[in-house]
Image (tube, rainbow, N blue to C red; front, side, top):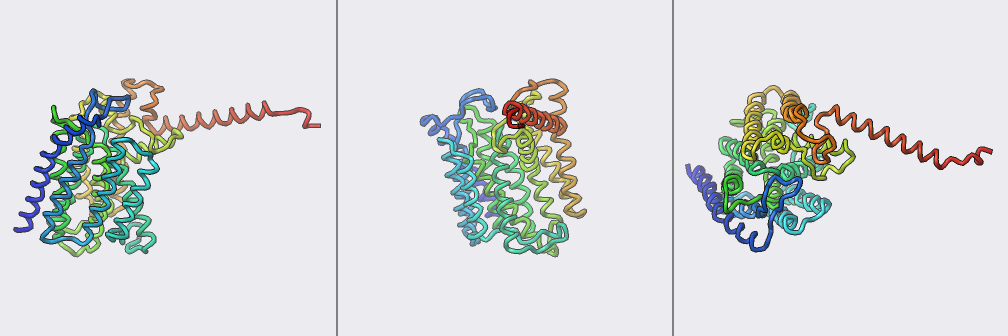
Length: 396
């Protein structure tokens, strides 16, 4: 019972801190002109303060540290250090903007702190492709990859009101609930401290008027880092399948819990690379942009995506005993299909211009045609260049 009290107290404390901190951050952001001005990609119609991630960070750190005072976990200090690093990187990016290379370097360092100092990493593949326990090198490479992908997925998901916060709350609630019922109380407190901090921000971000605020990279990078740690520990705690409430196929289940940020990031990266662009270049090819194009409001688009993510969570938990590969196949096939539905209606209704550089390549077929035309253009250019440089006298 005392663990439940700690958990509820941590959640309430984080919520109260976040609700109090957001108006303060809004006033400071207005006074210093740290505002997000509308542009061709922006979903806002007026300047809105950024730096909302400050409230999430502060509430999470205070609530988790106090909530875990009765049962501190040794790696917590290193988790906080990694989160703190990403917090300052996001803060700097929100204020003066930093390059993708510097941001990636910081993510790499944060991942190193989690792996080598906190000693949090994947050690088992749960029978995926016939493999269970893996070597140290493979473990480190896999963990680096998962952390970097997760952090960037959450960073890219922050596009409309409440989306990144809503998906994060949903995922943290699912993982935190499992940690609690399975006896991993420290990580349950950690998860629900995060939920409380996000909930306070969510209220102002979605329903706020005078104190409306955006999360910014300050928040999305912090959330991505924490969720990466939670996902790794969820998989590690499920290695022992004899424990109560053990989850089978946990790698696939954890992927299903985060289906929206992961699948949408993979889809958008594929589109950008097929256009010969950097995967990190900004555009409006995300699913939430598609829903806005179809006429949905921010709130409706956010709640539609959260509902779809929730339904997939129910599905992967129900299908967990079928094995990792079948569950992953279900996620990619049905997830990919659902994510393409808005694009179909956009194309059918001709709701975007054909040459709109922000929204292109709605279907794989159009991507293939684009790639084919691009190759033809390159071949023609090379032949024209060769013809112009041709010297008849060199033949004799």
